[in-house]
Image (cartoon, rainbow, N blue to C red; front, side, top):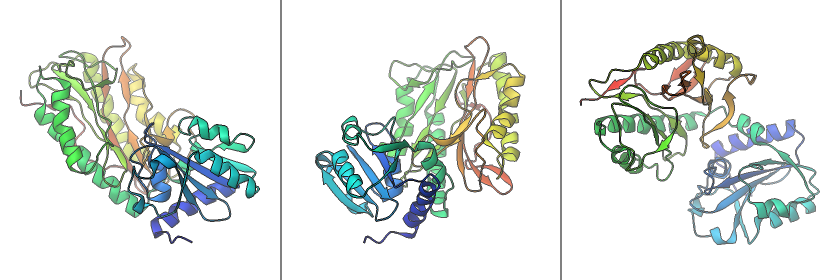
Length: 372
């Protein structure tokens, strides 16, 4: 038997409770560096996937273990794993064999649609596989004190990264040149490859709603929206950004009205994001200022965020999941004008407390003016 740390024991207990509530005999937690969903394996085992993929298998009765493809024996720091490690040419075949030997009936799978390798899914043919993405994410949505420490560290890194981006920005520079300054900071602080940073660009008066890679041929104008998403050394993702304008940029009327709605959202979230409130109610509260002004939202209003960048529950229409204290959400209303052109998109990472929502970054909600 492998002795688990108290934090990993807590995580396993929460997940096993969800398994019991859904009558599962076992759970397969999929993770893949190829798809950006490696965090669930770290959450359940302590191991961070550097390359390839892995599965954490949690029987309802028995010890959990982590299964790697044979070629992944040396592409990660295996000493960080707190579970028994098994290597097999085709992990799905090993899992299927143990499932049949154990007489497992219902088997939940986190990552059945987007993460699990086809060859492993094929090997599990004939077993009763149950999609378990939502249930798994709900089980890990409430953060422990140790997790919140990691979240706050990621916010520190992200917030400073925005400030560096702002200092490097000037109209006429390429998006790649400006983003590189922030990325240097992110890597130096231990994010490694766990960054997903983009830009929304347009004209000197408004930004368009499309997310773009920060390329050398993307030349920045007098107004733009960075989208900054990083995970620090503890592997907890966060999102923090603000709109940026040149010193003398005159913003479009729609952009100014969207900013008014953003200020209203920021205050509404403080009151709405309280334990017991539904995600639907939060969505309605924070989106009211945008919809009342005739703007629609092109991206989800918000979502739970943790060791995977986008987790359930999402903050949106008809999502009746209730918030609980110490849940962490990324909030980013993606406001788009009726003309499909003018857009405003700013990100924050929020903590649900007994008193309401608390933004974990200290940046004021405003358009930041550059020195040039």
